Length: 332
Ligand code: BG6
Image (cartoon, rainbow, N blue to C red; front, side, top):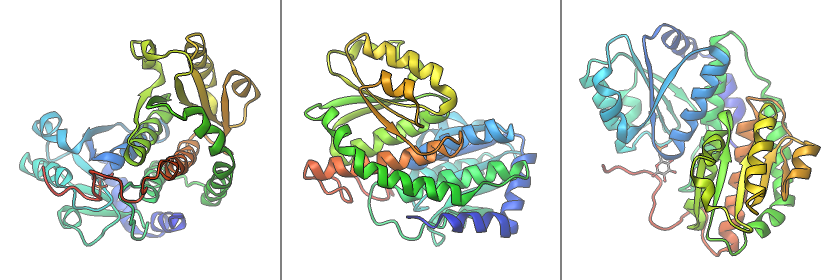
């Protein structure tokens, strides 16, 4: 389990976070960039900063930063670069493009402090996850998301109850080991399925789908559940599995999205805080033991990390070293 407390102590005790908070609060524009799982963490961070601190982040894939944001940079803007390794070429390219276009300060959210990205950064916010061996990122994702949450809370002079998060994660790990067999049965022999999230759980749906793709080689697509009815719903047929991740506050939307799938004979696996109505509406219900709007996405992602791991093992695939991908991509 990552050193979650490490992130909290960094936030409370280190002037670097106060300096980052000042930069974020005074910047004209706040560009954020990352790749793969790191991109999904910054996307969740975008919801945290918007919903908690009323601050708008401009997210981008690192490989798309040059096309999307670089020409707009000014010295009054900042770039938040998110990377576990600090060696992803796309992220380094984005930082160079930001500098080349007279951008302002670079803040990096980083695990490897002896990396090229660290050298390119004006401020480093460590995610304190220790060494991550497996190619698919898991604990570093958890800590990247936690860091964004802590940063958002710090911008409004608040903090979070880390012990509450740790307990919810530990309870979810126990729950996952019990419930994943029934979830795996619901997707057995299926070669593809969707994972849907709404608002703050949309980044979790993307990350869950990436984890499952990486370690099972099955096609699994993450999507905003509000978009599913605008086309992709046509794929649903008898028994087609659709996962729906729902924060407590989004239940009304989730019930509607469950109905959309069920009336087309799809199979719905709902991941949400305990709720009798959602449970009765779903084919499989995973009761995540966390109702807090901002902690729930982080805790729900841990369930999918365990689900992906078990799926890989069932399929005889090494979850730490899946084919075709590597821990750090140092080429364009
Ligand atoms: C990919 C890895 O190559 O790079 C992913 O397979 C990772 O797991 C992505 O999320 C980004 O890596 P980093 O080190 O920049 O966070």
